[in-house]
Each structure stands twice: as C-alpha cells, then as structure tokens.
Length: 331
Image: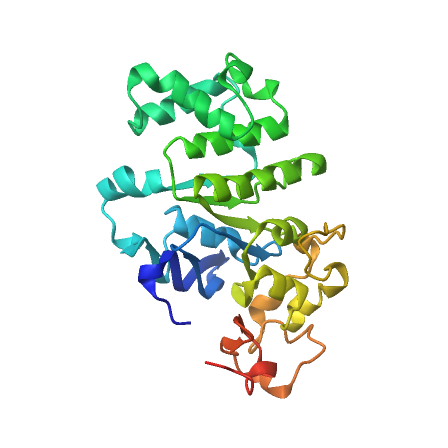
C-alpha cells in the first residue's frame, strides 16, 4: 500500500505486534497484529472502522496507536510524525491532546467515589485548555455537544448515571482537549441496544460539525455499516479487506467478508441495517495456519492458499488479501 503521508492524519504501515507466551519451559510466539496498514485522511474528517472477531488484533492496534503497547515493528505516523520517536514531553504536550481514547466500559474509567464532573474539570486543568474563570462555561459547552449539561451531571456519581449517559460523559471528557482524532474501542458494546445508535450518531455529528475523525473499533458490523466511511476487516491479525464501507460490506470480495453477506443489505443510505452479526462468536484458529489464515474455512481455497501468504491486491478501489484476485490486481 502506497501512503502519501502529507494527506494522512493517521498512517499505519506494516504494523506488527508479537507476544511471547510462556507455556511451562517453552515460549510460544503469537503474532497478534501482522503487517497491518491503513490510513485516516487529513484532507477531511472521516470515520474508519476496524472490525473483527474477538482475538483478531483490533484492540492491540488501538493500544499501539495510543502508546499503551509497544509495536514489534512497523510505523505509526500521526500528522506525519513517527509516534514511536516522540519524547515524553511531546507525547504529553501534543499527542495526548490531539488523540483521545474512548474505552469499552465507561464505568471502568471513573472511580465510584468521585463526582463525575471532577474528571472534566481535571482534564481541562491538566491540559490548560481554558482560563480558570471560564472553565465552567467551557465544560458545559463540551457537555452540550454530547447532549448533556453541567447542571444535569453536577454532583452525581458514576453509578447515578445510565450507561448511555456515562459513555457520553466519556466522549465529553475526550473532547475537552479539542482532539483531531478519537480512538473508540468497542464504545457501544456495553451500552443497551436502544442507546447504541445514539452514541454512533454522536460520532457522525462530531465528524460533521466539529471536524473530529474517529477510528471506530468494533465487532458490531451493523453500527460500522451505518457510521463508517471506510472499513478494515481483521482476521487473525491481518487486514483482509479494506476500502469504502459500501463496497466492503455491500459488495465484499474476500471470502471471509463474503461469509457475512447474508446479513448485509445492499448499500443504501436510506435503509437501516436490521441484521445481527457478532464477529466475537466466530472461530479463532487462524493464527496457526501455514498460508492464508482463512484457508481452513474458505469455500474457495486453492492449493497455493495452504502454502503461501497472500499479498494485498488492489481490486476495485480496495485492498484484498486473497489469491483469487492475483490476476485482477490493479497495483
């Protein structure tokens, strides 16, 4: 994949993470993320979904971007700066203001013994984003962006909020520093089904009205189809298909993505996706295959698939890691 770094907000190139697992006296290597590459464009805000089953490597990608896990190899660039080469001061004063996380369980990020507004005021103070005399108004303005108000949450503890309210406060806290990118790791999986679309709509609103890009990590393809501009499908640490959400989910090329076709509607912005797909329940034995990680399940498997690792072929404005498209490669 050729990346024009000047046009990218976030540029992930050949990102790899290998974990060493001790089993008695022996050590096993697990390649959790295997040469993953994708971008978020700088020319306009966008939502890019990273979708995959449990154990596919998507959360490890998020942790490497956020600096919580050290990459084994590969490059992570944000605004054309290599994140692995930033000093501690640069991370603190620049990167942590620019890129903010939103985690799966909002209640796990808040102490039950602290009033919820304390986190918002502390974040504003720690990053010195507003004059002290204006902080109340600033926090209230940020809460208004997520459909809440300071008066509504003031004096309340986390357990006094609904799941949807708590996740909205998490988003508000992330917005305090005026970031350009939110890394949202399974942000709706702990929220009631009735509230999921409100959180997803919030991300779309932030993209359109506040110019905030979102890396949306999920195993819920319904919300990914609804919210994302582009999507990367992960399988066993690989990105097996990557392109516009309408093409990848509406007209999938990789046999793994095609496996999901029965619950994916034709791309139509006026239609809602009623299908239910949960990638977290699928098989996770792909890490041990010699060739293609999907070979043991693929209905289109060929002999070459069992022996060689496919490259990323460019087909119909997307990349597909599959030998079926070797002769159709446009690159």
